[in-house]
Length: 511
Image (cartoon, rainbow, N blue to C red; front, side):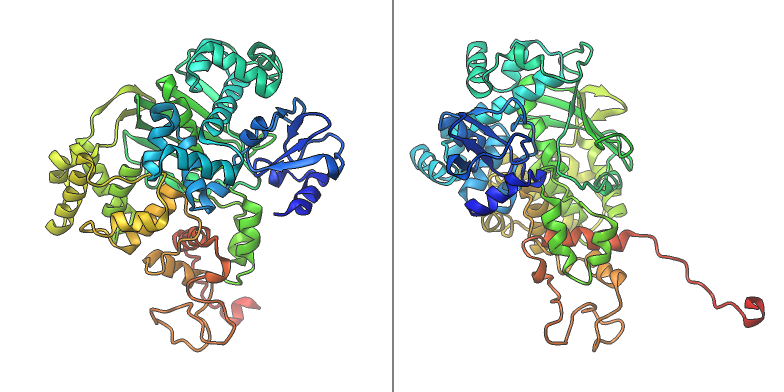
């Protein structure tokens, strides 16, 4: 977007752009979200920033009226597969808090100096400032949503000291932590630090079908899901965690509520980031749906399920194991095999709500877990070898990879093909433009959404492939860069129950 496109967005107070850029006003010294209800400033006084960190570094403070930190994040970090996008995914996951700027730079293959220069040029702020803004956002959420002690909030948000926490909050928000907490509209009763309830902001519309997607793949003892809720255990850098997310479509604002049953507070930023990635809460559904609806094959599906989301992953290594087991079999068969494999996992140190196990680690799978699987020995051996490579560090991938790098790492692994790489890219990287053309469910979805294109024989493997000039292409390239979301619509269509065939009514009965 250029300056005037952004200016028109703030003049219209368009909530769709909240979190995608920030508006700084020189005459007031504050920055706002695009939908701020305050009077639209003169264009000559406005500067737009890609990140709140850039606004902080330029000397601006957050608006107390619109609270620009209380918005969904930008979808650009998944759309952009460049260094800036990769870095932001890792920063949001708390890598700088755990490993420092040197650790972040090493993961991305750059020196700390190069990384600082590139991010400052691309995003207007260096990695430390970006991490600081992320900490401030987490702290603000905890202050207004929980009754945690201020010291606990400071360390849970990633600050190294209470003093640093206090200084940052005053500098960013022009308010002390205590004053900021007093702005909360609803004060919750005091709860233990290991039982937190937070609201998850997102952009409307939101299709709750993602809960059903996760529920049919849930593994007993590790996950539990319904059409409007999902819970699971997982490992984080400092210990085990347990969380649940619930959607209330009938309540005002249709809230998404995250309840954290157990977590080491040092892991809280990473948990919040991974839950947001799991439910694709930083997506821009209006932009995505607008593009998908232009394709006649998807228009009806988009109209019936606006705001469809792309499920993410809370553990990249786990997702690779799931993908390798799930390739070329049905969802039900994959769930059965993964349930068998999950017996190799250790018990959760924080059991609750019937969730008492953890998904097995790569080392556990390589050591004993593979023996629990049934099926072709070649497939079992491939999984064991991949698990060994993960456990020994010979195979290392995660949120900081781009699609070409992910392909280079995974395709040499025995048992991993293009489908597996594409599926991992969709769910680990949040890559929005992956189309799994050879996926059986995708092809079934194309059939389910409409009759075969003219000129093709019924039963052809290329059902949906047009032959007429100008007709939509078989790879859905016309809806790029949102083909991953097209894939979600096709999967949904393939899984939908088939309507019963109506027998013709005899003429006498009709009379």
